Length: 220
Image 1 (tube, rainbow, N blue to C red):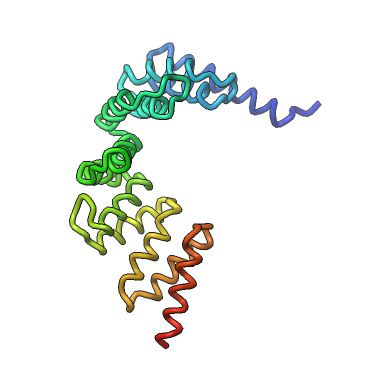
Image 2: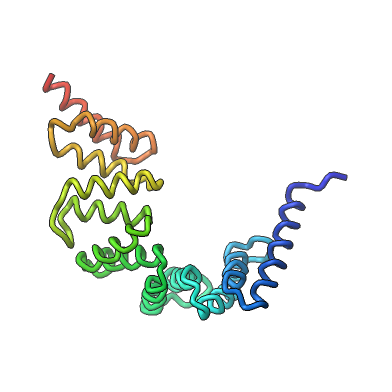
């Protein structure tokens, strides 16, 4: 009889798990990390956050930055552990020091939205954006656009928002549309970006697009 897709996937997970377990037994942090992800997501094993944390901790102890970041996320959201912002921040800091762009971005968001410390947020986003983190490029573009934590700079804002869009961030098109709305000679550019944002289902984009088109009509 033919194997069902589910069986094949199950076999693949078993294979993957035994491969990762061998790697972990040999002291490879990547092996520990991947087993942690399997438990975190319930891939090929029953979902178990405590076990995920156990494996992430082992990987992190060997300097695995992404495992460290995952641990931070678990404490930040209270997944399988008591929610603990201070601990999450410590873990994010350590992960960022090890080179995790996701952790640097998470720290930027924490500084911006929890502490309203825009200067600090700007510094973390810059670090993450330099490592091509899409979310950090977006937030950095927004800070440049609004002059928060740094001097307002529309051309830098556009550059980072464009980079965010190229890296797949779906918020960037709308922000780019608004950035181009600032100057009448750039209304055509603004229309292109707002239309893209509207097509991506951004809630406010269609409204802004209609307003811009009405404005352009009046100027013809």
